[in-house]
Every structure is written in C-alpha cells, then in structure tokens.
Image (tube, rainbow over all chains, first blue to last red; front, side, top):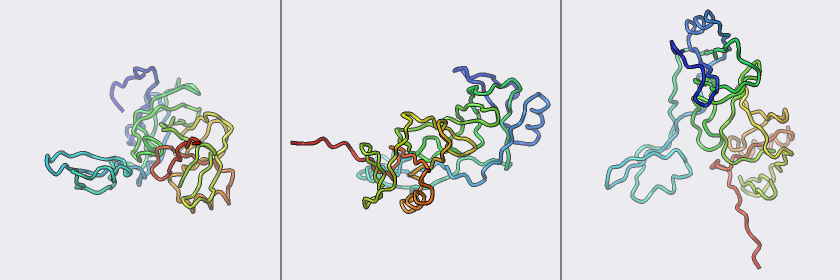
Amino acid sequence: MKSDPETYTDAGLRIIYTARSLQAINRAVKLGFWPLVKPVNMSPPYANTYTVYQHYKTGNVKLSHDPRQEMKLWGEWRKVADFGGQNPVRFRNPYAAYLIPSDLEVDQRVWLEDLIEDLPAVLGVVQERLSSAEAIWNGQDFEVLPELPDYTVG
Amino acid sequence: MRYDPRSQQLYTDNGQLIKKLNCPQNNPQLRWVSGKLRCKDCSRKIEQAHLLTELDLLQLMQSQPETCLLVAHGAGTIQIEEDHEERP
C-alpha cells in the first residue's frame, strides 16, 4: 500500500488497495480498513504466452501473443523462441488482502489496483493475467467485471 | 469445435451437437466472483467452452445439462461459422 494513496481514479472509481504482507495488512487495520484476506494462487494458470519472431534480413523482433497467428507469420520472419508461457508475477506470500474502507457502500463500483485472483485479461482470447480491474462491492466480496470480446452464453 | 451463430448451436468438429446456447437474456451480465465466472441474471454455473475439450463438454452436458456455456468469439479453439447468404 502506498504511503499517501489516491482515493479515487480519474474516472471517479474508489480505489481499493491490496496488502501483501502481514505487516501491511495489520498496519491498514490500525488505519481503519477491514482486510478481506484471500489465498494467493501459487500456480496461476495465466501467463504471458507468446512466440518471438525475428526478421531474417533486418534482425527486427516481434512478438505474437496469439497462437492462431503462427501460420501467418512465416515468410521472412523466423521463429526464434517457441510459444511458451512465463508467469510474470511472483508473490512472496500465499495470502493477500483487499483493504476495505469503512465507508464503502454495497453496489459501489471500485478499481482493484492490485488484483489478488488470477483472472484472464480478456476472456477467451489471450490467457494473460489481469493485474487491475473494475469491480463492484457486493457487501462480502468484489464482483470483477470481465473484459469480454464478442461472446454468446447459454 | 464449431459454433453456428444462426442456430446458436455448438458442435464438435465432426458435427455432434454439444449444446444449443439459448440464454433468454439478451445481454447477460457476467462477473468474476471468487475466481469463478457468474451470471448476474441467474445462478447457473458458467463454463468457458474454449477451456474444455469436446469430450469434456459432451460429458458435462450429459451430467449437468443446465450448465451454461460461454463461447468467446475470439477463442482460437472454436471456429465461428460465417453467415452464408442464399445464392440463386
């Protein structure tokens, strides 16, 4: 948690901060926050996945985050690192807490500055971990609004 | 897998019907709650079709046919069938 944190985003959303250590959580409690403690997934399914391509004449390098593009990127581009995943985030502790301000209201829209759950950045397309998100406080937990491409449910 | 937006049906690659996606809500409000995808409009479980195999989906629809499926149109594992206009 920052020492002098902002309270609202430019868009007017209440910012909810995350504490990732015992000391930070208990310091926030002394300041009047309620810590909503959650386990931190130690084997997150979402990783930065990409293939690295290099132009064999110029040496330029580009990334593809989409495995479907693999067939489109041959020609003068050569794959130099295969499609693979690397978890970009390592958290020291297996727990973390959203710091709930005492005046947070049910159904209030917020901005989770440091998401604890492992959620995909965009559903269905790129399995990249979402780091921050808009959410709604339901009185017990946050309901995170997913970023969706075109989709059908039923 | 293949999804036909006109009939709203999801098929296996060899044409076996997995499910007709017939949600009565035009624009269901989806949320992540405790890491699980939930619908604001009803309490049914939602599975992301692109994360499961065809076999898993067929078995799921047999054992829990009330489960909702989400077909993300950008997911590489599901082919969205294009509209084909009738030609004379």
